[in-house]
Length: 156
Image (cartoon, rainbow, N blue to C red; front, side):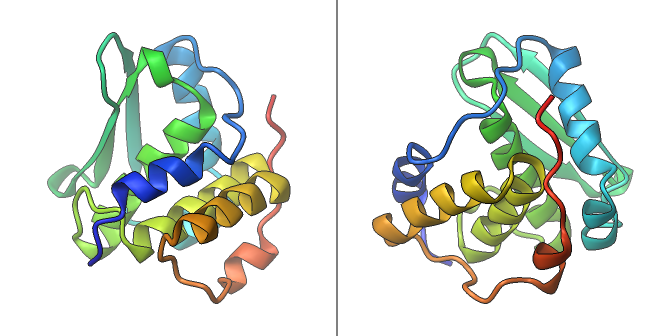
């Protein structure tokens, strides 16, 4: 699996950040809204719960805890926004689905793009995908049927 972390981080700069998430409560509300979409429930049924906490720390981390059927995200207060939260949710779901932890490979990028589409809409999805393409970030190119059927959720 290619290591394309720096290229992905550069690609993300091309996409909108979405809502700023000022508190753990704000972040959990957005996460639960994403988690409870028909798209998410159908795509990742094994992910029964994800908990998020906004912390005064440098980095954000998303991890899957298989024995709990749940994920845990620690979101850096400095970078607490929808885009970063979706990035970390993608880490959780890819680890749950493929057993791959912490990677930024094609499966991660596909899941991330799908989550951005569902939460932030077609324009944010296209901006992120264009950024990935410009940076040479590998992602599964063929669109998921589920992605075409997903409807963007309102941001507020």
